[in-house]
Amino acid sequence: MKREDIIRDIHGLESELAALEDQYGLLSSDFYHCYRAGELEQTRDFIRWAGYYEAKLERETRYRQLVYEHLRELRRQSGLGALDLTPAGA
Image 1 (tube, rainbow, N blue to C red):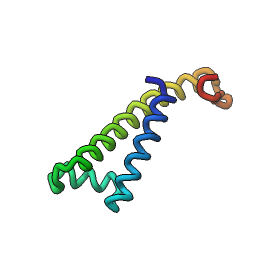
Image 2 (image 1 turned 120 degrees about the vertical axis):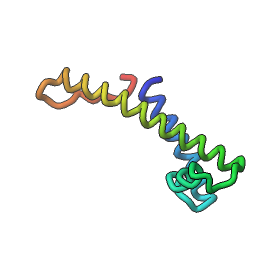
Image 3 (image 1 turned 90 degrees about the vertical axis):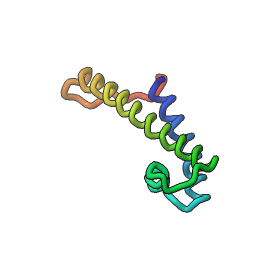
Image 4 (image 1 turned 180 degrees about the horizontal axis):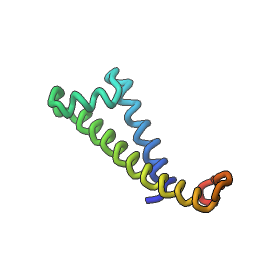
């Protein structure tokens, strides 16, 4: 999966998470803490919410891996100069 695809996935997941956060008045990180601690019922919304949150965390981890590799290569290519950051797909 490319960085650009991961970024799109993250944005889509954030949209889903924001809707659930608005609905229940709780940020996803706080919800997830309570959910993992067994303090919440296993409702359809909560299972979906936990899934979206876990997927977002996984995508962010993969993104960081890919972007660090990409930046390391840009630094290698630039030497001591400015990084040549170009638009994705260019």
